[in-house]
Image (tube, rainbow, N blue to C red):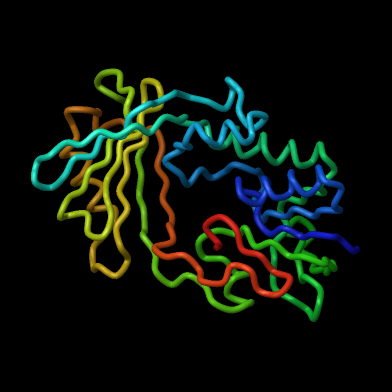
Length: 264
């Protein structure tokens, strides 16, 4: 099968590319190894309001959990600094699915449970995880949107080696919160902690630089203990984690391959 563009990864970056390109008439293949788009959620779920100006069709009452206007920073020396940061706390699973469905509606071919294995000459080597069968497709352009530890990036040149590792709980708020809270602490080396409100709940997490010899889960537990004025430490309604690039890639465009999102 021949495509104008093959996109690896159906997160927001990959699905947005698929949506725009399919809308312009390109023949697009969008693949993702997951069974269901949007799961697992590996995100604190905030996006700035400016994104809704560019793509209002991505947003609906179903995808927005809460609106926020300020980001409040807590420094290690006790200073509290607020800044304007209007945006939305999302239901990321619903939001991701919405963008992917919009891409499909414009004509993109979305294949879940399909893993990118590598390149075979000018073709992409893929695996259907349901049938456990490998197959190949040809594309004039390849977009790598396969996350922080992108295989597309690794196979085509420079790739990110510097990461923050994150860990996050979803906890119940003790009182309503309308701001994003950011905490810089010495025990969170190279990163920070956050509380992002989501109605009566909040995403409470930390991100630490991998180069420091710390256990991110232990750091999270210490952070939760510190912020008990805002949240109840138990029960834990959800937990997640992942990797955030600590640096950008110098050449996200390499030949006919473009890296986007955390991949680039």
